[in-house]
Length: 127
Image (cartoon, rainbow, N blue to C red; front, side, top):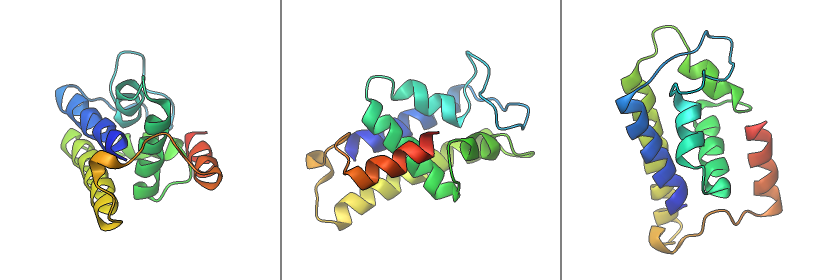
């Protein structure tokens, strides 16, 4: 969970530096442009399990069904860079708080080791 939260926080920092919206169709952001999804994808490139967890956590926080909800939310008219980075940081904080509430020190939690049920939920969120 620690690495998943770090990926969300790094994605927020990436968005703070440069952020863009797509055309509102829920499609991928153009190459070289940072939206919420591409920031998560690039910041978690070396840690696929944690990256999938970060994407799934954001989808869940947005009340979405899959990764497309991230693009739609990012591209909503009037959405701001500040809102996007704040949401990424809020989801990271929520993950850290959940790990703490479960009595698992964040430094001892694992990333990428998902149960069969969790892996299915993450896979659905990433489709």
